[in-house]
Image (cartoon, rainbow over all chains, first blue to last red; front, side, top):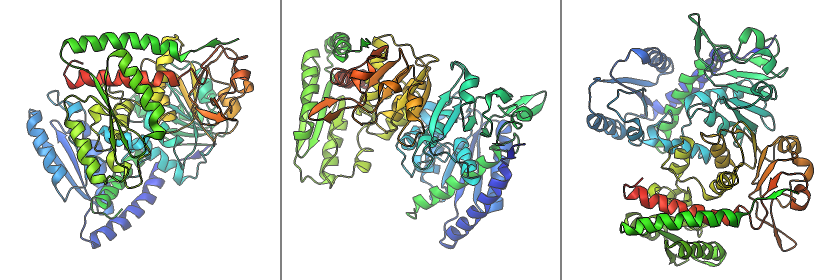
Length: 286
Length: 286
């Protein structure tokens, strides 16, 4: 049986470190604070928002939920966003998406201050990621995968890391993170157009599944002993499951993250880590 | 013997298209114009600058070389750069690097207007590339590789494209371009830390060599029939050569770009293409 890569274990370790860092910052008069911004119906983002709030309370981080009416104009929203950009007591800003139809996200993403853009909405952060600029905020989900890899000591240098999925928010940034200095993996990105997808996945020492298809990765897609990081969040017959057929794959893999209880549990901690980093950078402490 | 992927053939085809586009823009009162900016000794960049100038003259594009003294301060340079950013008659700006030691490129790259940054110096353009934003300017060299692939009808969809090298200016952006919509390749990025580098390269249907090591890629690294795009520019015994051992590899490959006479011949055309694109975008014509 494969080793279970338990997200809550990573989250707990990160909470401890973050709580200490936040305490130290508070002693300097700085309370790292996250603002989550919701325009319109807060329902769909409730679970995420509540999770982030709970994490914030646990580690002593400031948290504020900004709610704006569904029919707010884009111009009015930009005025409010700029206030948050300039507010010295706000260090991280996360805008829940999709936004209502009257909001052009391609405009708004350039308005959010890159220095407070803790989940890589502003393309400037994606560019910094490509250039390995240490001040950047890569998207939280692929960064959570790297936190898992670090925590469990999964070797990546010179190993074959296969990323299944080429989305802007997970697949591509995960590939860039894994090939970069420090991780030094040989990275393959595969997707719906890939031929012999099963064989490409079966060449992976580390498989990052981020394709959004329930139980797509079968046991035959897994190299014996491989580490599997499952980023998928799907629902099958009303039950949450990942992109990997867990029951099958765990018989072959060396280690595997479950869904739920895997990468997803780490994402809000990465968000918090980015808020702390932003607070330091904005105050000239990093 | 492999088909020769001749850069000048691609360049000639691009010149023809670009000349027509420039003529049409001139009829509207717009002369797409490139400014190359050199601080200090122009010697090392002379070959590139002259090549760009020659291309510009051939296709009717405006060209200006701005030279500043070696001992110019960074503040003074930024004042001049901002003038170019605001000058309505300048559409593309290329700053030759490395700059003298008193210039902090990590500061200057954020000053150059992203809309005129035709060779992806500003990280914003790298971010737009990751998000597949059609207004972006990817770096000229990997874009030249894609122009070669398009011109010669090299199939990439679902094929294994292997990028040898993970630099910010060629390897990583080449991988992002090849995996994106339209190219749809399965992309592997490999580098000095990769195990069995020869075998990884030998799995490539399309091999993009961008590692900067003379004749590193041997015949045994090449899959029979593969297409090879050699980005390397190295010197061995005073003779220019690529990253691929051309004499050996051409016996195995299906097609191969020589050095010189390959990708390098296309780069200044991509630069010109970006200037034309910038001129259109800046005038609301794209």
